[in-house]
Length: 588
Ligand SMILES: *[C@@H]1O[C@H](CO)[C@@H](O)[C@H](O)[C@H]1NC(C)=O
Ligand SMILES: *[C@@H]1O[C@H](CO)[C@@H](O)[C@H](O)[C@H]1NC(C)=O
Ligand SMILES: *[C@@H]1O[C@H](CO)[C@@H](O)[C@H](O)[C@H]1NC(C)=O
Ligand SMILES: *[C@@H]1O[C@H](CO)[C@@H](O)[C@H](O)[C@H]1NC(C)=O
Ligand SMILES: *[C@@H]1O[C@H](CO)[C@@H](O)[C@H](O)[C@H]1NC(C)=O
Ligand SMILES: [Zn+2]
Image 1 (cartoon, helix red, strand yellow):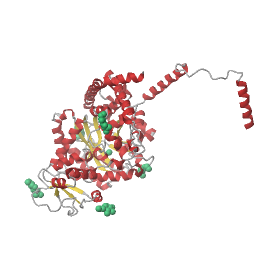
Image 2 (cartoon, helix red, strand yellow):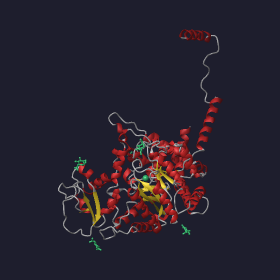
Image 3 (tube, protein in one colour):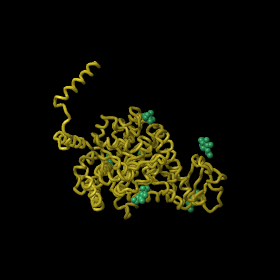
Image 4 (cartoon, helix red, strand yellow):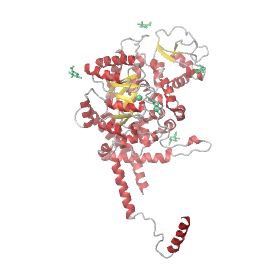
């Protein structure tokens, strides 16, 4: 064989001298076969894109919106090449920078980009997935607490060392008597008497490093620090332990009525300023304890917390800032760690609240770490029972389940997706593992279920290393309805209440998305918003009709469409001169 081939080569090269087997010409950009290839390729790419969930939205873009989309594409590309692409050096490898890098490292650089200015201003529609106590950055909440008379802080131990700061359990409360002599040295003194209440103003002023040092301390207790969140080698359970611990101090921060009221006004104002019109908040379950103005004890009446919320929503909507803020509804959420008896008890409380506040309560969900909590299949008896109760009481409380927030493939967390769809969930929270299930994908689309995607949350809670590894583009490409949410922005590092950072991550990461794709995601958030109680039939009908008609949903989408047009016009006015020139010169 070997001999033969050597022989063969010899013959070939001999005959090569006399026949036409020579290299001919040069590659030709106008070769008909090249042109045909390029045409076929274009066709394939176009065909592929017709399956995208945002296809219809893109088809309907106005000429202005198309121009804005092109301009933003240029801006994004320019910044990817000239702002983000920075090489590290041997003595400073952390100088390395690139578009789509891990959020905690990218965050300080984002606000300096033009893309950020655009995303910030974008009308974002609805925030559909966020947990109440993790929505407003704690610095703002502590500011409110410091400036509210009679607020006290207590610690389970002196917080004089870093270890002690980590270990201590801190609690806030309101006290009538702030005039009496302090009962103990300050909490960061080694002589602090554990569990003694100290006025927050004094604790902050006397803290090492003053009020700033105090805020740092609170931040340590309530946020996942950037250097921890990027340690992917430690895995999901480890980061969840840190994350869950952050909720500890927040319960008592949000108890005293004057604080709670200011919290809502600040929160709604921040959301409205980020271009958000509508919010559905996961809350209920354990929260909802209220101490009235000038009191010290929790009011046992379970309605007062919600009365305060309704009053604050109405108050904000009546302000100038709130004129485009359509409102807030609550998805009652219980911890999935509860046993049958305690969950049933909480469900009864939820049913009663729904009867008392039919407009406020929008649906039901189960929260906390999905991997370690009870799977939906185990919760089936409670969920079936709950459904029967709502029917008997003529209440509309649809399910909006967290499901598939996991790295699993075929274990019980991943399988929650099956249960969620069988239980007729109207949206899926996260659905991170959905892309592994072709049949479920089909069913999600057929049942008109939207996935609430929380890119930064997924990254910081270590499901993906960075936005570039996120399944969002796969979901959109498969035709799954999606919208962008922020989950727990006060804890997970966005450190603002709004959606801009999550929107930014998405548009920066994926060429296929662009401004038009981001617009589709924002419009989706309104198409799948639960503005009012509806039967399943009405719900689906309104989603199908979208902006057509005169329903509340249609009108809200129309209002967003008009804000979107204005926004696109602003982009063209502001950036066409710089970036359309750029587009032309880069094509030449
Ligand atoms: C932000 O942009 C300004 C002006 O272009 C520049 O001087 C500054 O260094 C930038 N900051 C960062 C963090 O890149
Ligand atoms: C903090 O907790 C750890 C683990 O329980 C313990 O080993 C350590 O002594 C504690 N330190 C302080 C100062 O409380
Ligand atoms: C606190 O003061 C209010 C009114 O000043 C009073 O109604 C309330 O009973 C007081 N609470 C306590 C625990 O002293
Ligand atoms: C059930 O509630 C709807 C409104 O949500 C109302 O129109 C209807 O009359 C109620 N039916 C009964 C039997 O109470
Ligand atoms: C499912 O698998 C993932 C990946 O191994 C794991 O993180 C998660 O804890 C698992 N869930 C359960 C319930 O075992
Ligand atoms: Zn969540």
